[in-house]
Amino acid sequence: MDSGKELPLSHLKKSHGAEVTVRLKNGSQIVGKLIVYDEMMNLVLDSAREVDPASGEVKRSVGTLFIRGNNVLFVTLE
Image (tube, rainbow, N blue to C red):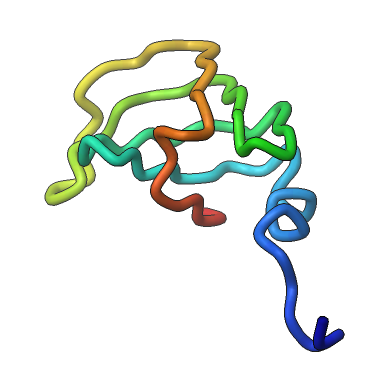
C-alpha cells in the first residue's frame, strides 16, 4: 500500500480523546468525546449529544453512548 495514504483507523487513533462528529446512516449526527473505538468502527463517545445536521442545534444530550460500527457513515474531528 502507498505509504502516503492513511487508513480510516489511523485517523481515529489521532482523534482519541478529542471531540468528534459522527454521521450515522440514518441521517443522525452525534457529537461527543471519542473514548474507545475498535477495528469494526464501534465507537464509545462521552458527553454525547444528538445535533440537528442543518442547524447545528442540540436536539438532546445522551451522555455516554455506544455506536455500532455498521451504523457509522463517517467521523470528523471537531
